[in-house]
Image: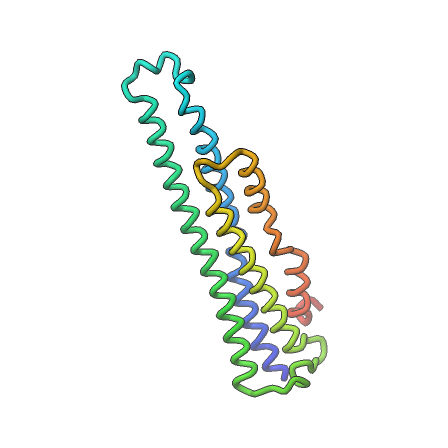
Length: 194
């Protein structure tokens, strides 16, 4: 039984490595979101003739500046979509880890429900490990869905108040409470804490 728990812990450890990339990607997404919102905030100012003063004499200045800003915004949107794809890759890796772990536990040795609940020393039960991994998968999947929705809602027509709310959701990551994630790892890796 101990060997099975160790194998499950090893798979969770690999999943944890994937999760470590999440915060870096979130920082990148937030940076690009901030860059995008800066451009979006500039667009109305660039669209008004009165803001050009002496520059009105320069041929096509308003159109050129607007064009460059929109081009820059499109590149930022592409970068955010690429970051979302990397988030999706992490979600898929976590789901694969859960599926493979379930298959290893249930398929290979066909453990009974009682064996799944059996605790050896300070090691977690197999059921605790699987439940923890399942919860982590669900958290990250829900957060990925939220991030995808937020990014899809951000357009060059977004209002300042909408941007503030969307940004706060990106910063908060409400579907991944750090204390809950830590408590899951504390259970799964209890033998390493002691």
